[in-house]
Image (cartoon, rainbow, N blue to C red; front, side):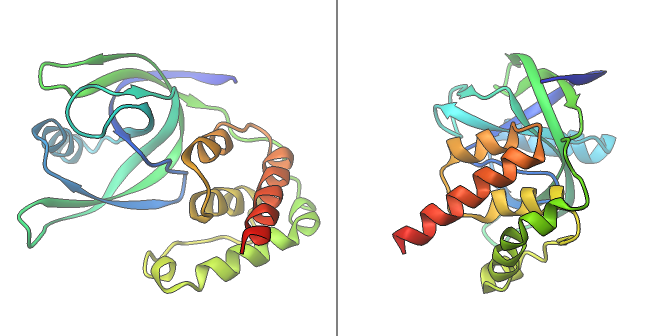
Length: 202
């Protein structure tokens, strides 16, 4: 998988969640290392990377993580009634991270490279996979998903793939494999197969 030449040191937020570009995620922050991360991020107007945990927990000791995640920015924050800091993040683009290193408080930092854009976004692709658009429109009507106010561009094949991959009830390892795909055609084929599999289980 190729990347552009841009790289920087980014803070990592390991989660048992795979986030995709254009998708949002609310979080409650309580660990000191992540409170520091959020403070620094807001002060410097700099995002961080959400990375799926391959082994380990979200709290406590450093977990094992995948190498490809999503660069995110904070779009909202508030002090919650339970006393915790609540933030909402939105995925911006995919990143590949390397050489993760824990700081004194356990916050992971890594070198991050922005990945090249996904290829294969020809205009006729959505015509070939109109069933995926129909599925996404159906999912978007669910009250919980509708409450997230996702901005979905049904004419953009990449946005359709990102949103479907995030919203479908599939396992995190499968979701991670979708995030790592570089070509829209096999990505859509995989989504179609997963949807058909889910439908046979209903």
